[in-house]
Length: 205
Image (tube, rainbow, N blue to C red; front, top):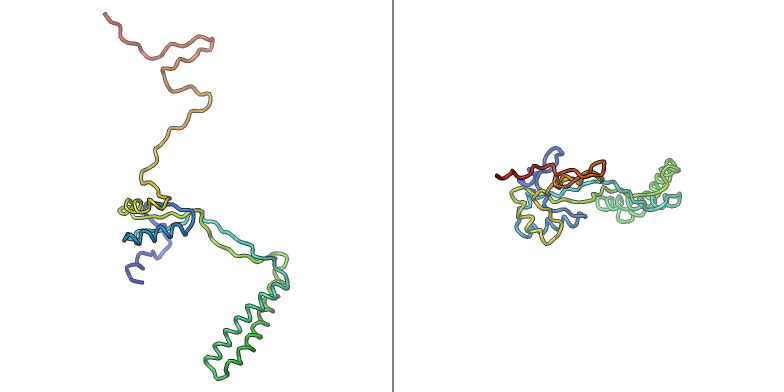
């Protein structure tokens, strides 16, 4: 990584600056948009992908029990034992025959520790899960001087956000409120009509 690209990353966590040029529902869509900008020789150093409305999602994988905990611990221990045996084979004269004992020892220790850990948490957490931080939408931010070109290049991908502010619409009057047009004649409480409050034309001579 060059010094120019690493200097763009702030040393302390800060919010990025720039204009939102597009918003997508998934990270893959935002990633494809940035890849398209890169293919068009766009200065991608001015682009940032920001995930908004972050949520922690925990997906339940399976129910835990003593047999499943023992099997999972044994398999994990076997893989670790094979890795240790491979290292011993490469850096010692014992040959590949050392891999089987290390795999069995690793499986035994993995089974033991997994069963002990499950017994300590049994009744409080009887399932295995995987957690992820997911954003509900992903915005592509760009430096203001390049925002117009970025919107033009991403026009065919969808999700482009206009750079002009939305027009402000006056709020609707509440139900039963009199209209604001002074030319409307309002009925009086006794049933008669009120005259138009606006002044009439001046009298002619």
